[in-house]
Image (cartoon, rainbow, N blue to C red; front, side, top):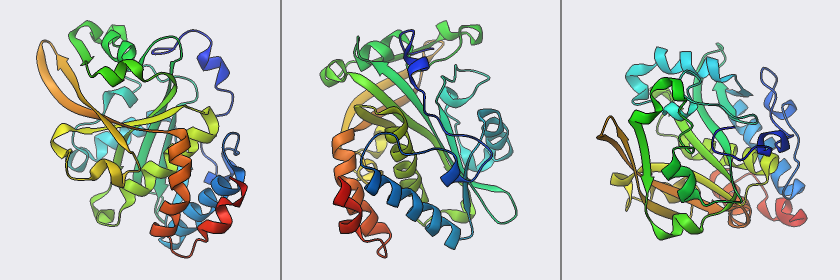
Length: 266
C-alpha cells in the first residue's frame, strides 16, 4: 500500500460495500455507537427528504463522473484517480444520487499509517500523494515543512475530491458530506487524526472550520516538472475532538435531531 507500511491495508478490515443503500453498506465499529448510529440515520433521512439517496461507488465510476462534469469540477484531485494513484484497500467514495439516478454530490477518503513515521515523512517522500511510479511520479513532488507536521503521527484519514453539482450548491452540502465521510472513516478505520486540505488562499475565511476541522498546517506545496501547481493548507482534527463536536454539529444543521439523546452513549 502506498503511504503505509506493509500490513496496514490488511488491518483495515471494515470497509463500505458499494452498490447497496448507505445504511446497509457498513456497520459502526469504532466510536460511540449511539452518536454515530443516529448521525448516519439522520444524514440518510435528511438527504432522502431532499430527494437524494446515499451510496458508496467504485473509484472507476468517480473518474468518469469527473470527466463528464469537467466544467463544474475544476481540478480533480489525482490522489483519488486510479489511473494515476494507488487506491489503498478500505478507501471510499461516497455519492448522492437524485431521483433520476444522476450523481449530484461526491467525496472520497483514504487511510494512511504514520505510526512509525510522521505525516511530514509521508508527504515529503511522496507516499501521501500515492501517485503511481508508472505515471512519472518523479516529476511530481510534495513538500511540507511546518514543525507540527513532524509531530502528527498515528493512523490517519484524509478526505478530499469533494464535488457538488451546480444545481445543488448554496445548501451547505460540501460541509455536510465532509462530516459524513469523516464519520465513516472514523468508525471504520479508528484514525487518531482526520485530515483534509484547502487552498492556502482560503485561510482566514473560516472555510475549514465549517468543514469541521479545528487546526491547519501550512503550506503543503505540490510541484510538477519543477513548477508549483498547488499551495495548500492541511486541515485536521483529532478523532476525540471530532466526536466531541459531532452532536453539536447535528443540532445546528438538522434542528430536528436531539443531540442530547444522541450523546448519551458517548
